[in-house]
Image (cartoon, rainbow, N blue to C red):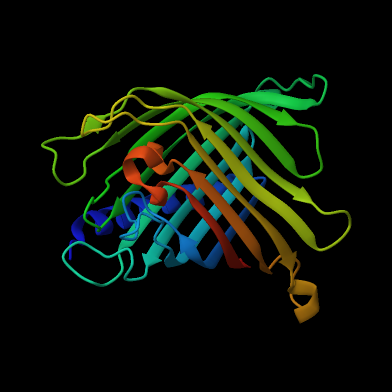
Length: 286
């Protein structure tokens, strides 16, 4: 079983976490959490049953998440370790595949930079978002994705937060079977990210929506497709019930919808290119 790229991804994720934690020393606020989520209806492109229907995959996902606010904006960092069951096997084994997926975003708030009220209509402020994703997975494809993003952001005037961004995506990959890293065509993405309180209840509605344009031909010369990725959760704060600090322990239900996953159309990748996945989720904040 290959573990070199996985280890490299995890080392990179830890290094990024260290950088984030060091900047958090000057943060106006910060939050770090360990999380677990589980679902039985994940799917992967090209992973289909003999009759052509989607192969349902169970995954445990362990996450480390950090967010913080500083003088000019916010940082967000997350690393997921995704552990599949045997229906999504690792390369050269019947054991489930393992994947590390790292996300970092920095959002600069122009109202903080210029120290001016930039509110306009329903918008509280405007800014710029930049960051990266990278992953490593030890299945037969052996993804080594690298993605850089940048673009303008509109921050809506709501309780909690609601940010709408239009981003340029610059993606490459170097899976098994190709001689060198392949660069996809630069392509746009509409991103919506939210975290909203539910009245005065100890509940919050959180999530993101990504609407991604095709990225040209893939590394095997096939056309890619527009991608829709929605992930949302309703989280309950158990802390007061347990007599511990507010927002320390949260539990909830999560739902993910992912159509044409990673740009793979169903016409090529089969029904596994689209997932509709309910999950349970637990977070411990410290």
